[in-house]
Length: 370
Image 1 (spheres, rainbow, N blue to C red):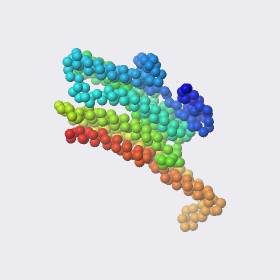
Image 2 (tube, rainbow, N blue to C red):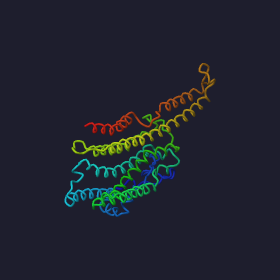
Image 3 (cartoon, helix red, strand yellow):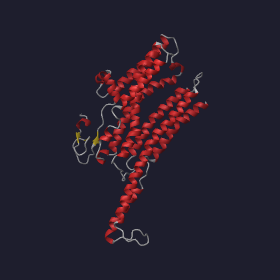
Image 4 (cartoon, rainbow, N blue to C red):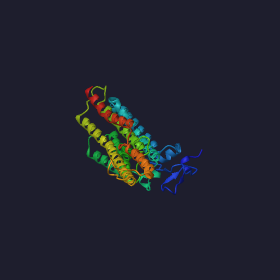
């Protein structure tokens, strides 16, 4: 069976988008994003693309790269500690550290999942039908950004390693000089840029665009529910990371493991920073809804005044008989616009989002008191 994505054709009416097979006018154009993440290109550059292609055309190189490097390093570091250095591995002293490789692999999955969800969200919102410029939604992350962040992260790690003479064992050299800057850093950078794209760039692009508001949205949130859901989903990954960080730091149930005050301070600061990242898109989308709603109400009011005599007096105004149908229609439209909420989330989204914000801090406080 042919891949449907390959059968899509370029739509001349909506540049940068494609149509489903058949070209039916009733089928909405579909915005197509790049097929590979920056991390996939990075993995191809160092040879993992060939391995991925041999395994399956459906497996992104980033998965092969992450599984191979992260799992191999975990096994090698444990084996080195046990059989060569004769020291207790960190995973034995604190088994919660086993979540670390899981989080890294989850970061790769999360990057792919969020990118796919963004694709689905903008097409569910029919962005291609509602704007004259689809390009701004095709590439929300500047192509140079991941490379610059990776170079900065790897460079800082290598500088820190060179300045710190505390651990020059074999495993220390490999971990600090290779694994952290060239395995962990690319994975974290890829997830970070996707997260920033969803929480910061996409809402801002929408605010500056001519997409407008879908006032006939049955959810009453201006057609922005898919984007609100995406903001929530992206934050869920951050919450999962914070929970793992709390478990590793406080190691519940493990004796002789005393977390430092600095670790608690870092946790709180990171938690507060993540709240800012989720507050920003909500605020921007709120201002977008507020602006579009106010402008539409002003347009409808101006149109309504044309069909009413003595329109400034509630006791003396009169609607000519020939204008009654038009006035009724305009009032129905005004009511529909007025009923649109000015925040891009349903009650269900709000509830889940607030719960996810509270959960990491609540867990930290519980672990501190146990």
